[in-house]
Length: 160
Image: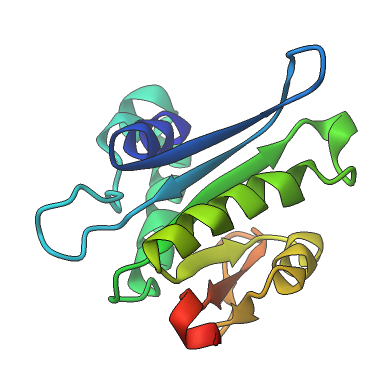
């Protein structure tokens, strides 16, 4: 699934990389533009490589999660924060905020709203500080997984 997300972000979205002063990787965010006109590529709800890369049970779980979030994604054109990750020892030092701010700049330049799912309360609080609001009901994942919280940040014209 990670390989599919990265491929989709490279081909139809944006990959933002944060580096430390010494050039080592600090964090990455993957931004997608889900298809809104039938022409632009978007994120498949069932990435085909997942079954080949991951054990069948895990691939099935990933497909369930992908279907769940896809069913709650807005129909309007938007930028989608598919994933954001920061190296463990650098969490809490502003790297996620820097990655997020760059994605916000991209969305603002295109005058697009942003959609995402927060997977922890800590990430939800980060998104709230950056102008996101809860959107819809929380989405509990099966088998004791985290509760995903859909969130939206309006386009610049809607925030004025």
